Structure formats: C-alpha cells, structure tokens
Image 1 (cartoon, rainbow, N blue to C red):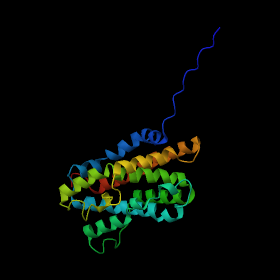
Image 2: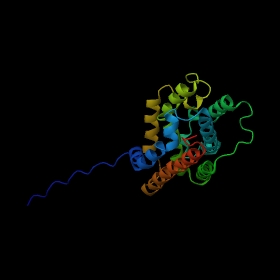
Image 3: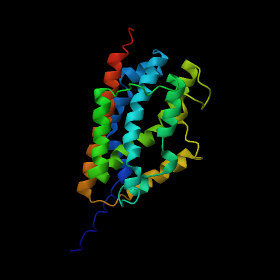
Image 4: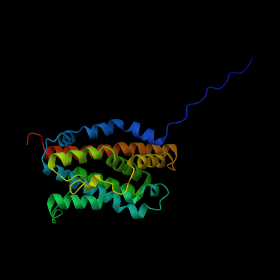
Amino acid sequence: MEASSPTPSTPPAPFSTVIRTASHEQHTEAENSSFMSDLLGGRLGVAAYRRYTEQLWFVYRALEDASEALADDPVAGPFIRPELARTAQLERDLGHLGGPSWHTGLQPLPATAAYAARVTACAQDWPAGYVAHHYTRYLGDLSGGQIIRGTAEKTWGFARKGDGVRFYVFEDIANPAAFKREYRALLDALPVDDLEKQRVVDECKRAFGLNSAVFRELGEQFPLSA
C-alpha cells in the first residue's frame, strides 16, 4: 500500500502579525475610549488636549530615559532609534500650550504614574517587555497619531506640523511606511523563544490596558457635559 503524502504544514504567522492580532481587542478599546472619541470629534477644548499631552510626557520620559542603558541590549537594542525620540518634541509642544513654566507643579494622573512605572520596571528588568511598550507607543504614533495631529490643527488652530503638534511629526523619518515595515521585521526577528513571545504579547495587551486607564481618568476630568 502506497504511503500517503504528508499534508503540508501552514507556516507560522510572523510575530508582528501575532502581536497585532492578539492585542486587537485591547487596542480597539483604547482607541474608542470616550475621551479619545470626544477629542478626535472636536468636542473638547484645548485644555483637554494639553492635559493629554502632559500625560504623554511622563510616559515618554520613562521610555526614553532607558534608551541609553538598553542601546546595546540584544533584545531591546535594535528598537532604540534616535529618530523616534519624542520627549524634546513633547516639551516644545507643552511650552507652546502652557508657556515657559508649563512643568511647574505638574503631576501625572494616577493611571499615568502606574503606566510610566511599568515601563521603567520593564526597562530595568525585562528588555522584551520594554519592547512591548515601545511597539504599542511608537508604531501607534506613526499611524493613528497622525489623525490626532490633523484634528488638533483643525480644531485648535495649530500651524500644520508646527508647535503644539510637533510630537506627531517625525522629521527624521522620510518614509513612515518603510520604517514601519523595518520595525515589524525587527519584531519578527525578536531573539526570544515562543514562551517569551507569548509574554511579550501579554505585556502588549497590558500596555493598551494601561493606556485605556489613562483615557478613563482623562475622561473623568473632561466629561463631554463640561
């Protein structure tokens, strides 16, 4: 009796696809928060946009304060790209929004403090977890962040790609689509085993959850009825 031919196996999905698909629900929840919906709908004042930008500053400080220490790390190091750095642009935007003393007395929301603390903990103890936070923030900035920029320019009169929205302008990335392809290729080549990859996926979900918590607290500060 002739042996049957083996059924060809389906190649595994690239890790960048796995992480995007697995976190889709959490990503959608964050995007569709009432605060972000109201902000993008032009239904909130510039004070809400400023407060949101302040929260981003705390998160990106946590991400970028770790950059130098992780630059040579075999897992996180390839993702540390100077053209992504956002802290200086955030500070320029905040100076435009709040004047030269914008940082005086500035405190993060409790959810923001928890988010930044988690980023710092991963940066110190778990480089692959840091990559999960890096991915959720910077690839989002290069994609959906551009929608926020357009809304801010139209709603509050900022100059196109000028002060107030510089956080969303990546001047040193000439081709964002190509850059995102390169970034996803780095994710696909992440030098960790399958168990660690699953932990990264879980941390990515956690990152979106932390972001959603910030949006909830911002929504409490800026309810649409106000």
